[in-house]
Image (cartoon, rainbow, N blue to C red; front, side, top):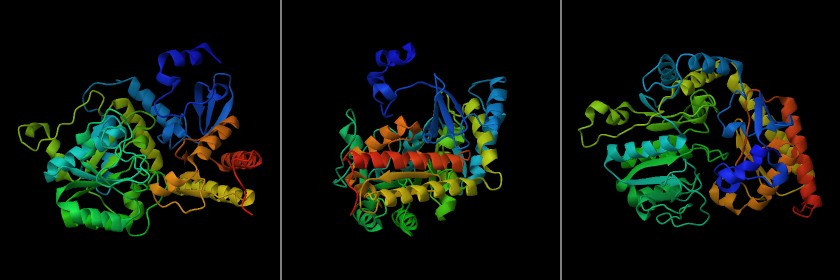
Amino acid sequence: MSDLLNSLDDSLPGGELGTLLSYPPELRFLAAKGSGSKLYDEDGNEYLDLLMGSGPLILGHCHPAVMAAAKAQLEQCSTCYQPTPSIAELAELIVSASPCAGKLRFVTTGAEATYYAMRLARAFTGREKIVKCAGAYHGCHDYSLVGFLAGDYDPLDAPVNSAGIPEGSSRTVMLSDFNDLDMAADLMRQHGDSVAAIILEPILGVVPPRDGFLQGLRELADKYGSLLIFDEMITGFRLAWGGAQEAFSVVPDLACYGKIIGGGYPTAAVCGREDVLNLSVFANRANPDYVLFSGTFYANPMAAAAGAATLRELAKPGMFDRLNQVGTSIRSGLRDVVDDVGIPAQVVGIGPVYNVFFTDQPIVNHRQIMSSRMDLSRDLLLRLARERVLISSSKGWLSTVHDEADVARAVDAYRKCLTDMVDAGLLQAKN
């Protein structure tokens, strides 16, 4: 273990980056290089990367077109607090792709995007409350963390998942179950006249929406004069060119983008109806409904150049067919493994994302996820890391450069790890 790796314990709380799972000492490493679908540590060991930077690297590590665009931008300016050609191009690409986008505002992170979308909705409607789905992660701000890890909960008094969150913040957020339109309708029937927005991930991590669920939320928002916000951090430019809006034929009032649109660099955006976004026009700052957007690195030229190059690549024919095909392939292979090993587990996902949950119940919302064996999910993640296959605790991410050999390697690793878990008595095969 290198001196730099050891120094992380002295520099970082817990020696870890945020919520990224801290590996035990024998599995820790510093990622020295990425190439395509692989990561390499300081000693040159190769890892099959199904983290993909937690989602931004849809084209894999160090894609030539993205690298060239970033290098060209770096030679011009890395940041200048002014619009640049790369910023103009990225904005045009996003607005042209997103069905809801009349206008767009850049921010730096996905958390900022969802935070500002809620602020816009409150300013536009003159209301305060937000309805979100239990288990949905909209970044690490106060409103998002209400009900993030809720199992059983009171929709009007949901738990928060961090200390330091003011009670007033949590009281403005109400929870409903993903894929439960009746529950959402009942909540809106009682409180709809105070709801500024319904916000959700169109897929809850990896859980697809049931037929009619998103359409039903669109109708509820319209009925009660609330805004519908899609958090497209995962789905944007991943399920289709137009994201979840195109994939499920539902157009929200606002959509939040991040991850892919920065091409591996930090940027995010809020886009949507022009009348809503125009509340943020600086010239109108004297108006009582003016919404302030400001940040030093908003629309950073480096991120914009890399993001625009990424979107240009994704616009090429066959790219989304490729992403869907590799996702279908790994889910099919993992279902075969689950059947062959004979364990109670569900393989869930859509497009190029997936996860394995240890339960014999179908996964349709966060309640089922929380009732699954999360301890076994952590054990599996660590076992896969020993096989030098990297996943996150919430999902596996695939990219356009993952091929059938990568899928086979991953499936073989899952087979070995799940079989070992049965042999160790952690899992019991079904009779």
